[in-house]
Amino acid sequence: MSCAECYTGHTRPGVPGGIEVEIHGIKAYVAGSQPAENVPEALIVIISDAFGWKTNNIRLLADSYARRTACRVYVPDFMNG
Image (cartoon, rainbow, N blue to C red):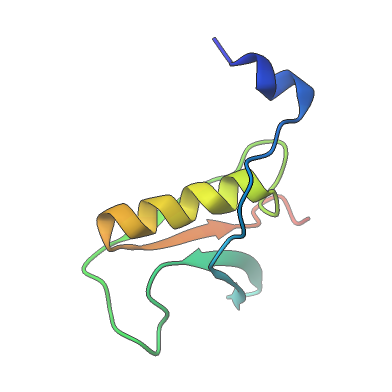
C-alpha cells in the first residue's frame, strides 16, 4: 500500500547531484561517478513512474543508490517527456 504522501504530491527536500545527458537520442539523469572520472563495475537503471524522470524524488533516489553502491545510476526518459 502506498503512503499517504504519495497521493498529495509530496516531494523530498534536497538538491539532486547528478547531471542530465543524452544517450543514443534519449535524455537521462545520471547519478554517481561521471564517465570522465572513472568506470564503475556496474550500473543501475531506474525506470521512472508516471510522474516522470524529472521529479526530485526519483533523482534523489538515484543519488542515494549511487552513493550506497558506488554504481553509476541512470534514470532515462523512456516516456519522451
